[in-house]
Length: 233
Image 1 (cartoon, helix red, strand yellow):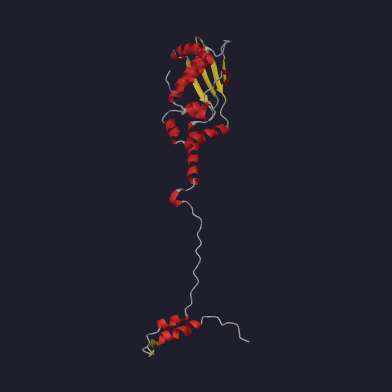
Image 2 (tube, one colour):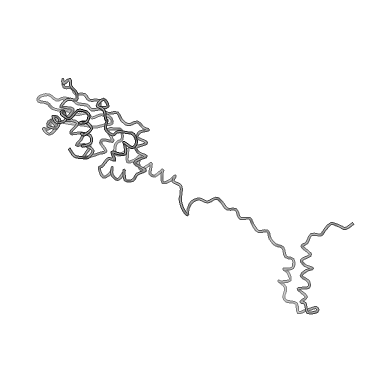
């Protein structure tokens, strides 16, 4: 078995005490005894031939809850590397552990296995053969392992796209384009200069004791803007 996702699945099953049965199941799978197999959310159903009989096998697992899938999707959307690995055919197995989740169970009681054969000691060789083909399926298409836990490829990628669009639309703008507080600029009060009219007139060719007439009139014009003081009693 490869060191990919399928290999991890088999390693988990071996650690749960299925090693000897898996060896028998491998031989049955290689002999083509598994006639059909289908996977959907939480359950795998297969037809396994044994001599003249065909047995129906089922392997069930609990799907992740909606909050658990939300945490998985947010983690995938936040790390582009995780999504890139997934699209390249590699499930970021360690990500599930970081989230406190297990893609594959660590207790056989988390797997519901049954077969129509009369073997009392479960899992039987028929179920072990299905497990081997299931591991090969996970190697070929890691999205099947996620579909088993409740999220198919199309739905998962669609939700990741929505999360990224939402993140881009709501992310705060940083740096130079950060929104600034509005700045209020007070309008300057107009400065009234009554004597300015003298500057608009053409120069008067008149002087008095050496002073220009316009300069002598300027103080009188400036007094025009000074408000009158209180009346003297």
